[in-house]
Image (cartoon, rainbow, N blue to C red):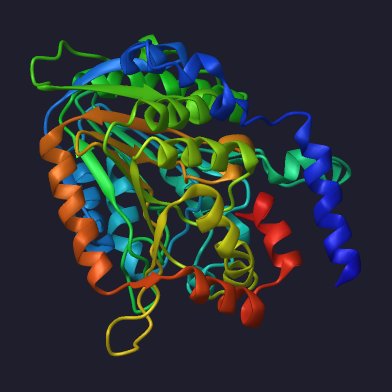
Length: 418
């Protein structure tokens, strides 16, 4: 165990040179004189317009809708996922994807290189997706695991965590659900998560640009944005900002320092460094109410790592913390895997990026900031329902959990394993 802890520390140190959360203590993003929209553009965000989305909190409902999208596609389908695999309950969906390719729809699909090493509940059912290539699907692996990577820890932990779907230049979806058994609600082991589908050519065009970059990094078969048709957008009623991986920390920092009333966060594996905690503490001192609703992943190391950091998380951010693990009858709830931030009941952050050190620094992410009080109200109501089945944690309870169940080595591992 001691050697394991040393390895964790060495990995963190080896990665520190190429990572940064300095945006959380940057005067550029902390300034109250700079409008939020300017900060987001400075972070690399592209402004788009979107209508109210179709919102999916159930993997089963997203699976059904995804299958419909594949059936209805005429020109092209672009997909990325962190964990992608087949299982008996997903056969219809993947069958629709292959059928689309066989009828002439261009299908490009990027999966992360560790998909075949999935250690979630999906491992009991999964079939790797290489068979898709035989049916005309262009499949590429992002940063596949190779022997040479074993000599460079940074390449092992640098993963593509983005999830997106683009269909025919008119429909775009992002969120937290992977394309595997546990995410798509295909059994008792499924997770609680979300996906957002926008009928927005504006967003679809920007995501297509992002996808082309991802594909060309993962594959020797080059594509261009001009290969995929785009269309004028008259459907948008809300301003939104698509934030690339390079601007995730800046985006979160901008929102925290621009907050005037409240911050709601769903932080999966909430390992925050001192810069991130400092920004939240600044909000606390300004009178901003911050609430975190989160799980403690009971698989393996994760829960012990969360319990280890829980007291300092509360003391150094000033946040109210709700743990969503068991319901009122003591039954274990599905894992809360959702990524969400709502600021001032107006600004909503959705996408793949967790509010933790790894998403800020060690993985490729994608987020969308939507300026919509209506969407914010829906998601605050959604959060309230989750809070009913959650435990509001006191500092005393946090200290007890740390003492009885915390583990410092597990906590160190969550820095790059979460």
